Image 1 (spheres, helix red, strand yellow):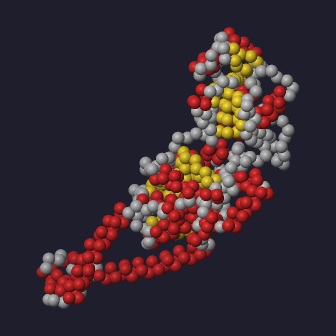
Image 2: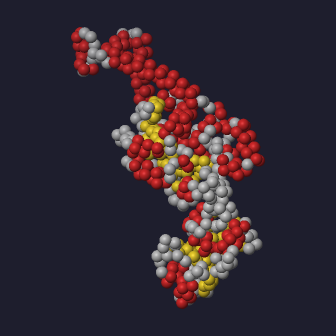
Image 3: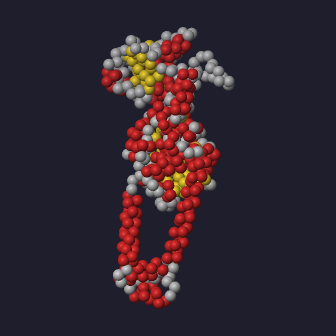
Length: 519
């Protein structure tokens, strides 16, 4: 990831510049803090003479409160009573400062921090609102280079911590030694950006690299940084008392070892609270077989998938040079452009079905389908029984697949009853795998109108090429999740050198077979 390209131009700093600026600011703050602590220590000392202590006690000040600070205030009040206007002004201003300080503290406690609208590109406005409303638990931010998804998280996470004082955050990458120059620097940048609007905010943070963490001084909240290459350090995280890890950010998520790793991490750190937010940011992998792309296709109610690319990023943030390079790549290598810059699944040359459209097929659409086909691929275990219902729009050469049944170890009689429950009637023609004449015979005895698919030496290749040649194969991933997965992930095999092997692999293709039997 080109980190500089993810930061608005007006605020670009090198990692070294950020580090120097941070160190200088921290040193100034340390000196100020030391002076204030020393003065407070002196003022809290007991008055040095018994006479002074007795005078303070005579006006109602307890002996333990007879400090130098009390003596100074008493002296100023006495002078003010005797007509000293400077002392009167001092007493008035000091009382005002105490009241003002209390009001300021109350104001800070109720202040809500928000990312300024000027820091959000148009692609993230609705996403930002959904997060604020806690519309989902998981936020999957995919896209191409310079889409600003990492910059958004870098500023959003500090904002969330500011408004949720019992939350801590955990930022994760696969390799620990990549943390400092990526997510750590990105969070630093995000805090600094918020400081442009909320002056003094950055002074409430300390930045450490050993161990790598950022701490909000006024509350003790922490932002931890860990790599999955050292899982033990993730499990050993213990947030401060009364706090919990409410935010997790997986950066370069496509490089993580897989969903099992993610589940184990989440199970070990997501506990102790009832308000959680998970961010997953990644550049879309080319292969549809990549675990991220496969997982993203699985419908999940508490997950929001968000896509962005450089075209929605303000030009002044990413620079003309980046745009020129993107346009050059678009002309010279369009497939690479689509994947790297637009963040699309382009495949790696082995995809069989480049004509897929995964979307909802509405009841209204289905009501107009008049060219219906039904197919069955017999199975028991481990191969499943697979059924599909589809409509072919001959004029537009588009196949719609809108229903499926998939099961293991279910008798023919039971699967027929299950199909009837789905609305299959006795006079609806079903085309099934002719390799199992007994199963076809069973269905006929139940009253089904069924026939075996015609097969020949080249029937597989012919039907697969026919499907791949259609203008579109539209699959509803909610109604037909298994079918959508099979068609999306079906790829030609390759040899050890990455060369395509001729022929269609006979694996993970049960619904594909059910569909092609009627093609």
